[in-house]
Image (cartoon, rainbow, N blue to C red; front, side, top):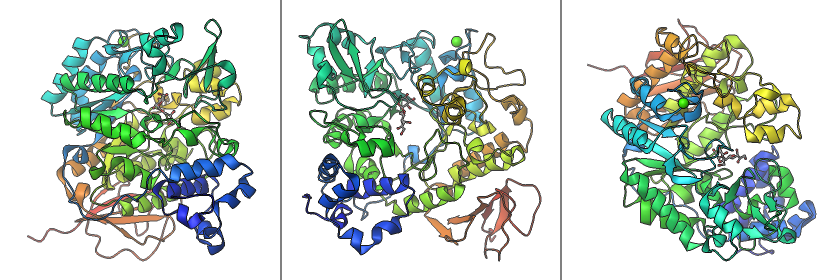
Length: 609
Ligand code: ISL
Ligand code: CA
């Protein structure tokens, strides 16, 4: 057990200690060499207070570190082959995907009408962002009835039809499980708020007005909402209409199991679990450390991002619902690092199958709303670290985009002539590294960012953010970038009516038109997906990096395949790698002696007949 007299080096011997130190260094934009200094390694934890000027931080760190006693094992085990390691997932944000009835909002029948397209691209499964009944304050991540479909999106029969249509095509379908919080319109919350003696009261976190804490919500306001009529405050880590469920209450966990079983009975193949690492809060909800708040932005996070019962609760729902239904599970886990991700998803832990880690989405020291160009060389370092750390027990998810992040091409460059090369290079990374790729709608067609005027913004996060930042800052990070509606054909093709949010950038070529152009980003993705689907080397073979330390360059082998790329806008000239094999696919036409800006090439060993 660690205590205040333990040293930094002892802290680094615990999974969470190692990950927290990594995260802090990353956020401070400091190299890990910094921590390898013996003077620092031998520093006692209590002395950290001198730098941080806060007693609470060291206590919180010690508590966290004492949660997991041992590191996840790297040893033994067999790499188990299974469907969710082999397919490429396609993420659909239903409201922005395809509208079937002209009300300007996407719906389930719209998705049904595009299944042929999804199948023809080679995707093996879809993940739908929430489709349940919701007042839509956070576009469905605020659920008011887990057992009803949002009428704007369709009916339970539409969902049944969709599940069947997916399975007929051999497509898997997973749904979003949002159970860290519910909408304020959920009957549980309404009853809890209005009837203090109801058993629902303990489903949430209520406090007297003067007994709340300093936690800050992810949407830039206090995490507590005060209800005047009832003279009580309730905890919300997200919008002030999304209240956190109290997972310490057994009835809440029983409700979650019921929900999971309900859609399992309808035949779905798994779930993506929204902010699932936030479900266990430190008892008593202690004050958050101001220094952590300043560094990460969300005061209080150390008290719930890896809470005391997280493992217990995940193991419980796994045992009671995921395992018996043979469901696949992927947890959205902001703030989780390499070691803790394994504690949550290694096969012998019986918690989740996979997690989404986010540390690669911004460069060190940057946050989503910073205006800067993303350096892909950081992704290379991140990936080498993650891929080398995967044992037979582990697997990882691969992604650059989702409904919460701006488009990756625009993050890398504002030079339109590089867009096709960058879009394709991103595809090569996602489809040739080891892990399960998740492609977000429109990414396969090279969708990019655009400028949103104040009145064009729709997202609650952006609207709150605009109260404290200028419009340029909001535009750099707004989640609306990814929610701009799909551009199916030259005219748009998303709706017959008026779309609820802007369409994709006018200069982006539509999906229908790209399908007809063999050199389009879309056709490149299609070829890449087909290559991965048909070659298990690209799925299961170990990744062997070459010239790891060569600046700008990224090269690796996967069985018979060799992949190399230039991660920058400057050409790279150097002694070529030997035994690359035969060139199979590239994001440029023709050959050159050097690697062109953002060039990515896949080679395969010559087949000896
Ligand atoms: O953690 C973050 C920043 O450090 C956030 O980006 C966080 O990952 C994200 O807001 C959590 O997202 C999920 O839950 C939200 C919902 O608004 C998002 O759309 C969803 O993906 C609340 O349900
Ligand atoms: Ca509609």
